[in-house]
Image (cartoon, rainbow, N blue to C red; front, side, top):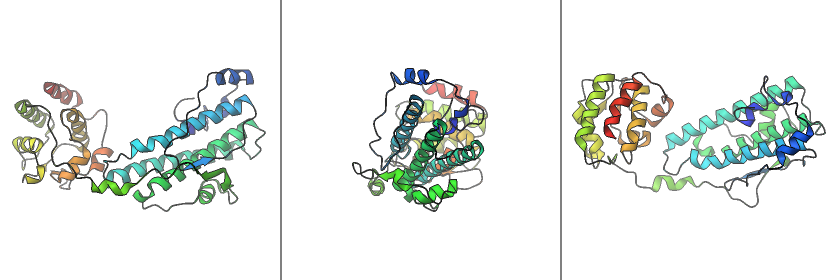
Length: 315
């Protein structure tokens, strides 16, 4: 199975029902299986019936490991220096992902006739998968719900919402008594934001050359902005003291890619600092936000190869 365990196990073409391995095969897989430690930022834990054969144990451990890895990854998904708009965007992405997992699991349960008879291997495994994703949904709400305007649901309500289960056993998921809520977001706004993009090199002339060539290649700027103004802004020790507005003419996907390629040559040139500067304006005359750049991040924008060749001059 490929991809996330939360989606691969309920895949119609490659899901759990396609796994015809025998008990001896699972015992072999378990012989050197390493169980991850519980995520140190976890708020909840899953209480589930102990697996009584190798197949159940193998899949229980696979699901446990990916669940704990996902919870642990929240710290990277919501870094301390992220802005509120970035955190809201991240929250929406994760919520949509968990929403899809739960809907896919629900569809699989209905189509495959999965029940609460845990003596059956597939029933046990899919129910453990279901409870684990409900826990992820609850973890996200508990730790980062302040970044969402969506309705918050209790664990029981999540069970009812996705599985039409009005009697979902909430004792299967409980708050951990050994860990406390991991996130304290009130400190984010106290940090003094940087007001410089922090160009690393002393050779500023090459940067100007690069910007001019990119401007010619992708129509980076419209006629209200000169390349020299952009160059001055990128080198400014305090961009709040500069008067120039940077009016973009290129596609947002192209500028997002350009930001990614230029980022290694600066200490702080990224979507967050670009939004904070309030100096960049899109071709539709709207302020450029970090979310715009994140949503328009693509691997292969127009003129990608030419952009790459031009940027190489900075190396």
